[in-house]
Structure formats: structure tokens, C-alpha cells
Amino acid sequence: MDWRYASKEDVDLIDQSVRYALRSETGDIPVQIVSCGPESEKEEIKMAFMKMITNARKNIYIQTPYLVPDESMMESLRMAARSGIDVRIMVPCMPDHPFVYRTTLYNAGKLIQDGARIYIYENGFLHAKTLSVDGEVCTVGSANFDIRSFRLNFESNAFIYDKEVTEDLDARFMNDIKLSRPYTQEDRDGITNYEKAAESISRLLTEIL
Image (cartoon, rainbow, N blue to C red; front, top):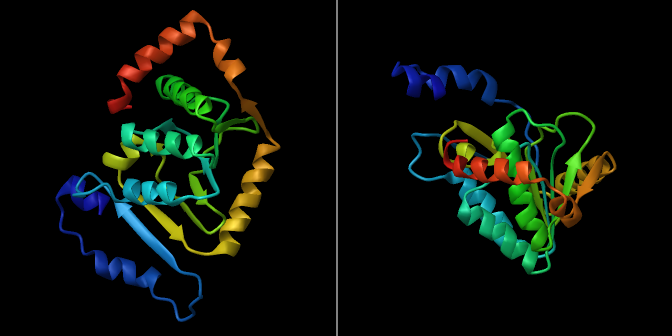
């Protein structure tokens, strides 16, 4: 689909995909594959994320290399945290894009003010892109928690409706917390004027990051 969109070449997708998609054995876990891209009429993955977040009653666990959501997604997370839901978000300790990382830390600070818990993963670069809710449903895929993934990039996520799989993902999240440090209000209070300026500039570029 990416190739067809960019090249305008009429590549036959069916013959290529059938070779990999058809399997004789089947499982019993419901999985929904959601894809979107610049040609999509709606931001399907973002809408699915927001549905999970707004329906959460106990906990929301997120791992993402980039925390640059748009205003509606940010407000959904802040509302969940203010409502007493256990919102935990894990981001990497090292940036691969300085502007994105500054915006990530700024958004993390806003969420901390509303009661969310932020963790900085210190065992290398965190590139996991996961979201789990209430120990019942989770999603893993290519979409980051950022505007570019929701609107501009070709992305695909698996949404898994199974307690056992979700609990396993949650256990991995808790193990990764042991390799992380909390990012707290004290950290935010201690940032330098240079860092504040860098965050302000980065926020202006949010729509194109």
C-alpha cells in the first residue's frame, strides 16, 4: 500500500499477501489489525487508542519512544489521570531526535501534574510501541504516540482482546520499570532556562515533528 501510494504503480496486493496470510491452523484469540496512512479518510489508529483510553476504568500503560500526541489525545490522557486511573507512561532515556525528545519531556511534565506516572527507560533506547488497558485489551504495532504516526505515516497495529496476552504485556511493562527511573515533578522543577527555551521552541514545531 505504501509503494502504491508513493509510486502510483498499480501493484496487485492480493497475490502477494495471500501467500503469507492464509494458514491452515487458527487460534482462539481475537485480534483486530488496524492500518492507516496519509490516504486514510480518518485517523483510525488514533481513534482506536482514544477509545481504549476513554473506556479505561483501572489502568493505562503506555510504552513509546515519542510522546507527542495532538491536543485531543493529550486531553484524554490528562482526563484519565485526573479521574484517578493509574496512568503510567514509559519513554526512552536518550533522544534520537532532540526536538521530539524535548516535546516528549514537556508533555510528560503536563501529565505528571495531573497524576500520571512517567518512567525513563535506562537500559538502552526504548522503541516499544504498546498500550494496554485494564488488563483486558492491548495493542502493539508500528504507531508511535505522536501526530506523525496518527496522520502522516503508514502504520499498522494489532489490537488484541485477550486477558492473558494483556496480562503478559503488563508483566513485561512492570519488568521494564525495574530498568527505569521515575520522572517526577522535582525533575521538572530542576530544568534549566536553556531546557525551558528548548522545550518552547520544540513545541512550536509539534505539528511537523
